[in-house]
Image (cartoon, rainbow, N blue to C red; front, side, top):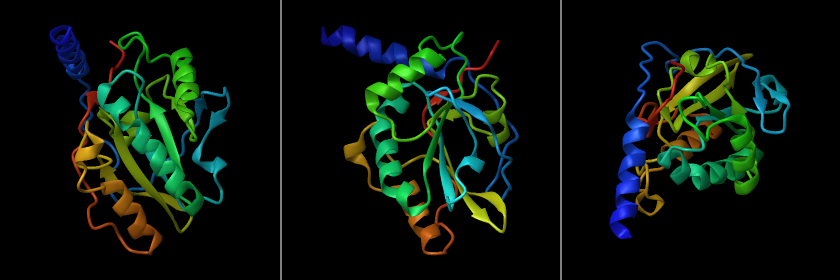
Length: 204
């Protein structure tokens, strides 16, 4: 049984690395971000403009099926609980094509959001237009955005922390530290880290 379970994990990870998406362009730290409008699991369209009192956003490209995304769901929930009331809510976006990644369709997103009791919007990038704008390549892939002088700019890009799979092994919480710095009015000490996860599954 243990052998079969191990084989299943290996197969899942190999599948994650298949259908790689190359995104050579995308936002860099300091760039101004264009607003988007995507469907939430409650059926409503959501954009950054719907959060007029927010100081910024923690945008996370994630999905249902990637083992790395699943391993980070509780951490994403914790970030929203910790920072939403301070002005940095989480916005999660599923960039995957469900024809390539079965289980990542809108119906399955609704089920997952209900099961995990997501406290943040879980949006579907159905036309796969938003993730290339950002330059996201993995799930999960995080972009911390900050409102500055009427614009929304990128302050951090990368991973949630330094342990992609095991929360007990975390020693550096990149997103947590970056948002705390921004709340103090300072620039994050670390602005780029490598996003570790599954490749985004794009339309063939």
